[in-house]
Image (cartoon, rainbow, N blue to C red; front, side, top):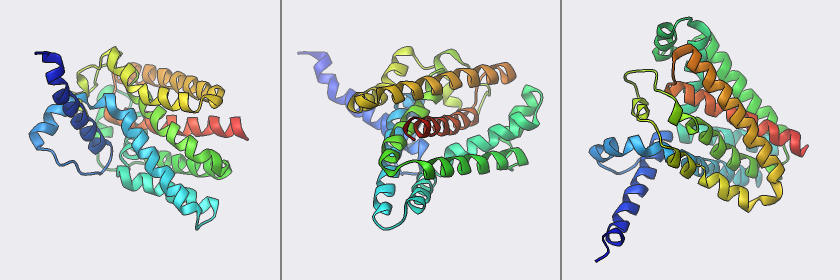
Length: 262
């Protein structure tokens, strides 16, 4: 009897459950798993964030394509962005707001973490959310429709890879919190696995390799600077920091595509 082959179906089923839990964590989609199972599996979900990003990007691309048959380009873009907000429950946007409130209004690590934990939104956070949405809107308004689906799929995957790519070398800055499961550091192999959807997508669109490489380097360089900054300020990261990084990386990828293709 081959023990490894006998266990393979159970291992695949477990990995599929981990993917479902990661999807439920990043979106508002319900996952019909026991709470005990979700609690056990959620520490392993970061390796599937890019896979969830492909799902979110696919949903956004579908909404844009469907809306384009009825509405002008600009209105289709608005519907697309709205669909992402509804699907994710503004999960990353909330992190962006908390990040700018904390790092904009706090000076010490304790102050920054306390402000980010405050459910109330301050002026820094509100302005960050407004400028983030406006940047997405105006960049995508200027982008040709033929590039938006490609750009949205790639941006939602690569921006989520940015949020996990430095986790093997960073500590979680809080002792507790919604993302405290991340304090178990990811392994290098998990990071490489999370890059798989980006690699497959890039291989499929190999003719766009210059843009893909430029966007990857831009996103990765920004992520490195971002992580270094928060490490100096609070000695690690929080879920809000990762949410802010995802949002800014997504905008940067759209901007690179706009510059490259226009």
